[in-house]
Image 1 (tube, rainbow, N blue to C red):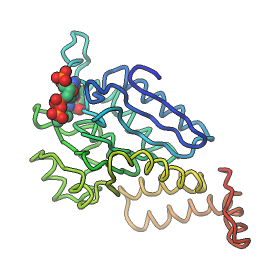
Image 2 (image 1 turned 180 degrees about the vertical axis):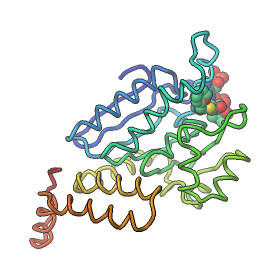
Image 3 (image 1 turned 90 degrees about the vertical axis):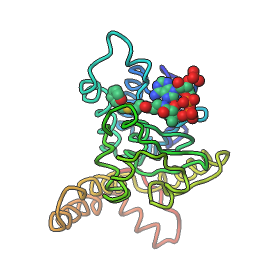
Length: 259
Ligand code: LHQ
């Protein structure tokens, strides 16, 4: 437990819980630093194979802690983004392990961006996404303008970002923003089950797949085809690929080691 963030490692699955329920887990400097440190440590930990990000209480994350913005030593917004938010988004995207956002309640402002930056999102029935930036005269940040069009298409992204109406969980499911919606009481069971499934996959192949998907967003088909060939060369030479083939032939479950 550090400064509003709970870190639990259970075998190959790490669960990060934003833990300031009284403020809907709004992000203070301490939480942002703790989250970045925890993600960087997990990224370097080969024993962790899947990550869950969730929130304590009735909210997922209400974005920037607005009370902290009133403090005399609060950094200018652009500095705060460059120094505290953007590094979190970068590590979420670059770490090899898949990250699941278990969106237990409202995800607003940079809290929504955090969920968008995860690889997979599952939501509780009463979760909602709020692009709250415009309501306080700000622009979407922490990757929201990059992730949204890629997740839901340009037209829907413009509607969400400009109009800013809350998106309830069922609507988020319909437009592809989340991959499933489950009753609140089942959310963590579902998240752990999905994490367990991912943790049983070949870690190197998952990491390479993440990097291929990331790169594909900014390159043409020719470059994507060549990039896939290069990554497949790496995956194909791995012990996990040999193990996967052996397990298939022996009709047994594979035991991947990440090498
Ligand atoms: C909060 C917050 C909050 C503190 C609820 N802070 N206490 C990056 C760079 C640097 C600076 C600028 O920003 C950014 C990116 C951003 O994230 S900008 C967007 C910042 N976030 C917002 O504008 C969201 C503000 N919150 C809301 O609009 C509502 O609270 C939502 C829609 C999230 C939830 O509404 P309700 O379910 O009705 O809950 P509530 O409003 O009653 O909030 C519950 C408590 O949480 C309440 O405290 P209280 O002591 O009255 O019970 C709120 O003050 C507190 N809280 N958000 N961001």
